Length: 126
Image (tube, rainbow, N blue to C red; front, side, top):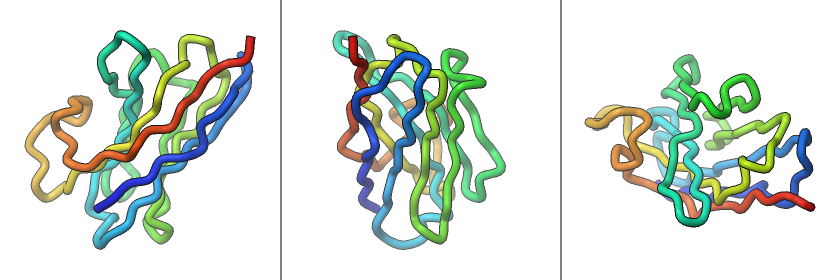
């Protein structure tokens, strides 16, 4: 499966953005999808992930209550709705996927995911 992440851009504190992750390939509905983010000098951190049918979600403490992950399997797309944005949310956001049938690692571990999008930058105006 190939992933394309888009929707990043210039945000304002307190504002909102919605990121999209478009997947190509078959059987998207059997993949767990996650969003990670990486800011300069830092490791790639888990933001949120969602299970096959969308019923299982997990968020990092830093975004809980502000971000919502969702998916539309009919459109082969996952989303990250980001509300009440903060300057510390500045990062490159990556979507990632792993086949749920063969997943071996934890949902929040970057090494678990076999497929990655190219990243989309979220930054803030001063």
